[in-house]
Length: 283
Image (tube, rainbow, N blue to C red; front, side, top):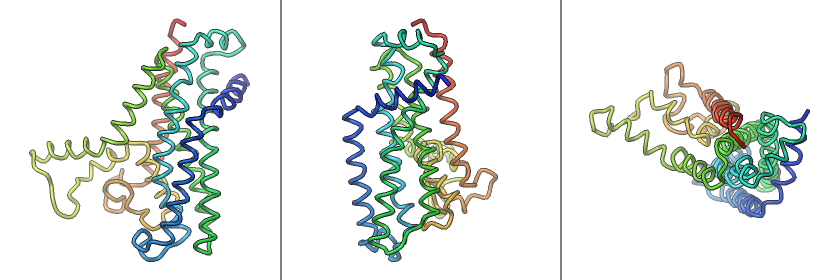
């Protein structure tokens, strides 16, 4: 299949990024630090550290790492080749534009998977050494959801890259997405609640209305944590998730499985829009 050829080449090329390996090294150091802190500081584990709790505890670190690493490794994936002119050479081979886009997503997802798998192995090893136990099923499920999250961000940023022939514009769009959805989205939701509540901040238990639950899941990193709550429901703190806890939301969308739906949305929609723009572009 032609897209697999593109994916293999793209995987090898992306692994040469020094910035990616620098971020990956910092990520592994963070995983080690979080694992040690979880095992040693009672306040972080609620006084009862466990291998299952450790798996969930390092989820936030993976969420931050994947989003940043995906921007570093994917924003040039299509736009860079168009800007340099090498896209014409690539398409002169028996590759369609769809092959290029799918191959880029597959290759960059493989690159992001390398440090995620390494982090799982490190976390499992430290969990065994520091806690005297390991949670093999939870670790495997965590890895599968983590790979889906890597695919999500790879597809999202490759989709952004496919919309333009300028690496500067692609970087600006990808960073803009990160700023809005990963850093500022909680503020956006609070502002919406403030307006909907008659310009008064709600207070008391259950202050956030139920309709905010799906909104809070829109950032891919929040959807990732919520997805973990769905597949590893027994993990300490899993029931809460980002925003109102799934157990507190009684409507049909109050299930943590909504996180997986959101991740799939971010895989399909930006990639489809990017491919459509790329398919019509004059190279």
